[in-house]
Length: 363
Image 1: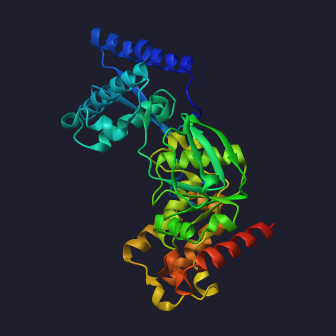
Image 2: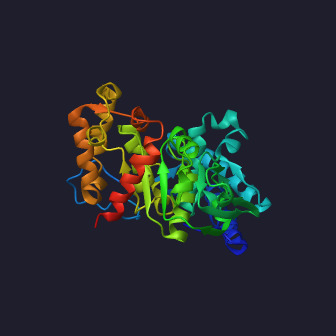
Image 3: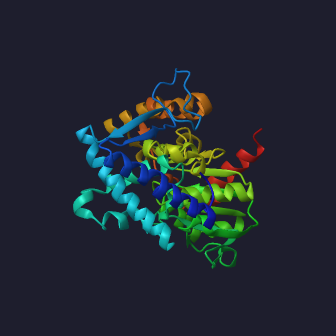
């Protein structure tokens, strides 16, 4: 599912859409038969940590058959075909569109953005491809800075020329080329506020690294760009998030992928990412005052308990699971910015460097 489709493969995908899929549906309808559209089901985790599951594989975990004989599925098929027609047009004209663009082409028919999202997912599964192969792109939200330069569709991004200046993460990740870097590691931070703190402290001037933020929950472009850098540069990747269940959810999305796009997990996840912090124990190690610690809400506790049930934590990262249990037991959370209680530059001058040194020295 990875990689940019060359012209021959685009032609092949168009052929499969028009001659294979669409033609078979037309023939079924002409002969009075209800078309049957098989949609494989994928998942990257289950909620049974004790199970001997196969969630770590990228094979289908089941199949759903869409048919006009089932009334609830008639609308879903109709929307799938509407979106597929738009995708066909995009490929033929070599143009790109976002999911939001597609929604506004027929807002009265689609009714909600989620309808378009589901149809695009169904199409990707049907044709065993990624969204970018359909010329459907994400609206970029991520930022990058540091010891890096590259080109995207002929446009030059020279972060090396201004190490602490934020550049937008490229949207057309498959058209990124000529990647050059002198970095020693990649640091992914959860929030733009932390990213800007590091930029203001000239962090990349004294630390040979690439810093990326998805500005909260990461979009597809940010995750694909990170994966591309990992594949091309072979650098260690560290992730810094708030010490709360929402921060951990973001960490898990980078590391393991999301359930929503489990069918395309291999091109989106960062399998060797390390959790740099913030850990529950950091509040004691770095003397975070009690007034900076916030009690976990009931919603926080429920979310944490649900995270603890994910099979990949026990299977692959039991230490991460222990940290989550510690947070739940202590009943408190804190933001990365709480470390600024010591000094405005404590995060960039003390906390992150000490964490990196510890990671480098650990076996």
